[in-house]
Image (tube, rainbow, N blue to C red; front, side, top):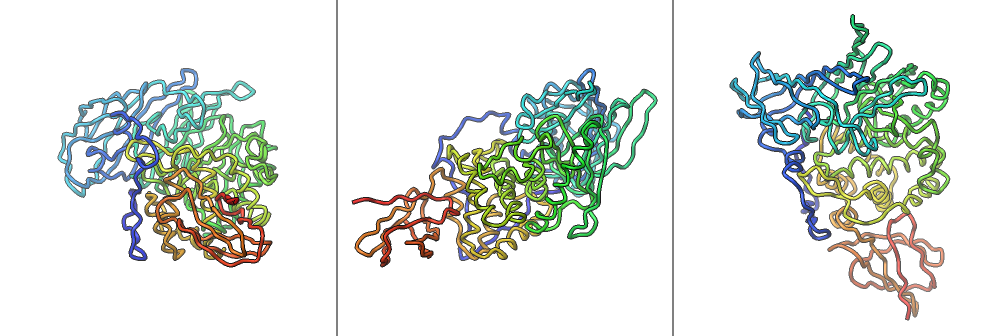
Amino acid sequence: MRILALGLFFIFGFHINSYSQELFQEKPLFTHQNTLRGSITPEREWWDLTYYHLDIKINPEKESISGKNTIQYTVLKPYMVMQVDLQEPLKITKVIQNEKELHVRQDGNAHFITLVDEQEKGTIQIVDVYYEGIPQVAKRAPWDGGFTWAEDKNGIPFIATSCQGLGASVWWPNKDHMYDEVDSMLISVNVPKNLINVSNGRLRSTERQGDDTVTTHWFVSNPINNYGVNVNLGDYVHFSEVYEGEKGPLTMDYYVLRDNLVRAKNHFKEAPRMMKAFEHWFGPYPFYEDGYKLVEVPYLGMEHQSSVTYGNQFKNGYLGRDVSGSGWGLKFDFIIIHESAHEWFANNITYRDMADMWIHEGFTSYSENLFVDYYFGKEAASEYVIGVRKNIVNDIPIIGPYNVNKEGSGDMYYKGANMLHTLRQMVNDDEKWRDILRGLNKTFYHQTVTTEQIENYISEQSGMNLTAFFNQYLRDIRIPTLEYTIEDNELKYRWINIVENFDMPLKISIDDQEQWIYPNAKWKMIATEGKSLNVDPNFYVESTLLEE
């Protein structure tokens, strides 16, 4: 079980509430299927996941999949209908509980299973869901998910799954909502004997079958979100090392195509450097029991838990390009750093609803800056994160609509990173800021969370009322703008383009003399003999000098 961590923080006599999206955008139209996919339906809420055994056969020649998922669950309250999700064109062929075949009613991608035996509160039950078919092909993995059926340059099948957003039910039947994560999972995959399958967790055993196939059994001992589960098939070779981390020895395993072994052994030296930096900033790697893996795939990469996938062509930057334009983005492999950081923010701390996807992507984009900070210094890190601002579009709010499986703006990446960088300036104490980041991963360890919880935790730990700050950057599309004049030995200033009660302090320089000012929506004045004002560029704001 990995259900939403309960308990909100109440601080300074206020409580950060949900902020109406209708203030900033027209309400989009959603379908019945969006609601079934994105909400905690009555057919989901009565049972709590405890264990999956996904047992499947993959046929590369036919590009097909078949098998079953054994779902173990605890009954939270008596109910007789269970929702399990599986996306077309895959088909559920039968469902069995206690040797009884059950009736299944399909409603699009949701399947409602009518149970026969009594579901008594507190009991542990098991249901087997059998399925088969030709799964959806990923059109543009990993952004549009499904199976990627490819070949390596030797003509050997090279296959992988990716499914964030679209949902893991695109390739296997499960309870496809983020609020409830399974406690542990066994992944058994049967493939042709010339291929190796790599999945999450640790390899328990490999069985050679009599039909020229092989079955691998991978066990995940930690809670895992559905989209974090993966299969990766190829002509893989393996090498490994042991990293001495904060919690002791951590196995780091690497699986790459045979022809890429030499390149990978050199290039993947980045992985322990990543681990060192992120254990410093975020705390211990969250899955020591399952180890860390980096697995080559035929698409760019994805944050599959303990099985991070990689397709960045063994280049620094993002496919050899610096997303920041600062030069610092070519000092590291973007995919190794970004996707691995998701082990802390996505796999350890996981959003409960896709509307809050910024919790994954904002913090993880910010992690790129922190990696640069750790190895190249604070000034370099600032140049990097300021450089990515050119990618921000401020089209719609970062937080999306709830209960319909819909994310907000893509600005969750770079605007999210710059929001956090701005917040670091406000905290104005780097050790305290580091404690907040590490504290998040300790407080919400292996939990699903809401934006509200993250906001309240940071507010409490920083000692600041950040209600308006988060409303501004997460729920509004305007950039706060300092409007000011300097004349007659007086600086006059205020914030414009802001939400109600926005009063973020700001570091400025007047004739190269640094100082803090405390603007809000009303004009304020201070005496000055200076002639020119510059805003600290580490704050994601704009400024306007009013001319006479």
